[in-house]
Length: 103
Image (tube, rainbow, N blue to C red; front, side, top):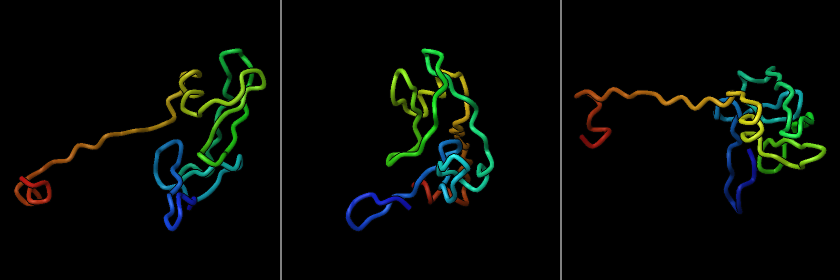
């Protein structure tokens, strides 16, 4: 758990699947149990330099030796990698559970 503010905590999220991160991989990035052995590919910056992947106070980020710090999502977009999964699930509402949705 990560400290959020006085008296409350914030759960860290896996950068790949957005589940609760409960372990760290070999790079030291908080990930879920399913992605503990996941190897992040070598990420390149727009200037063609290889970026280092690090974990900070606000989550994972990348560092380029020429350009500086970059958000992990932006680095994945530049490299045209779709590692972050935001799957939307369809919910079927029938007469048994309609009261849960105010119908």
